Image 1 (cartoon, rainbow, N blue to C red):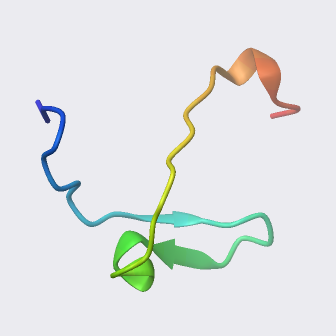
Image 2 (cartoon, helix red, strand yellow; image 1 turned 90 degrees about the vertical axis):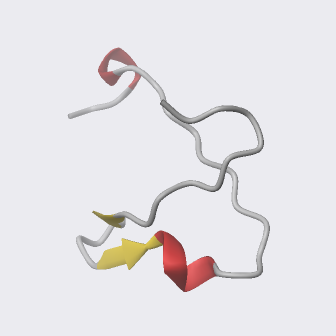
Length: 43
């Protein structure tokens, strides 16, 4: 379990076009991760 202030582990997920994007691609930049329930998506 991560705690506030911990570094997030690297992970890779597909973007809107299905291309893989890794957290490491944004090294040194501010990143906001937004998680939401499936009910709010078309998927």
